[in-house]
Length: 210
Image 1 (cartoon, rainbow, N blue to C red):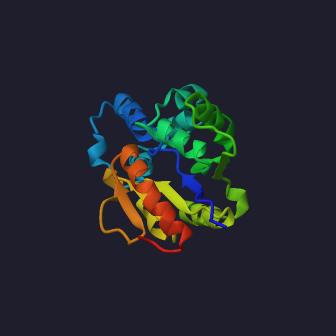
Image 2: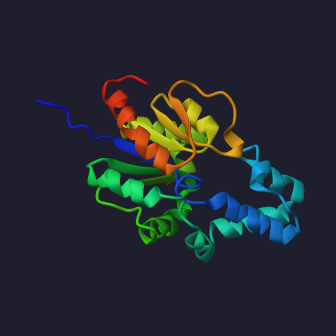
């Protein structure tokens, strides 16, 4: 009997299927009359550092945007993400969105996924809940991947990608440059991921990393 070549694919949301960082940065530039470019964001937690430098006022803006349904729903999807993920679910793969967004964003996140056609039969969504005792975003995502037998992950945070022991597609972003382990492949588009997926699935099912 042949093994069914379908897997559970873990997918981050922000900056992978949702073009969120540019939108937050635009709000920052407008409020403080700055001209910070996305290419200057060399640290994933750059906005957190800005919060510290600018003080509580900017921190309040971030909190407001995170919990603003209007802002969150207005965020745009990335490239061909919806089309590619739809193809995967049609092929029988299961999609598991694993985001470090706080659990308080579950409702609006679900609404955004449905609005842009990312929610399909069998889809699962996990958000970060500090009550579950996770020490960090990295610990949380690695634990979820193990718990739900996720065989491949799509991410934009370098720290998280490097901590995974499964094949990872890492979207090329200014904040994740540098050397990567063998299981992490840097990609620039969903089209590239589509082309490489069969190779990664075969490797995952055979318990190896290409």
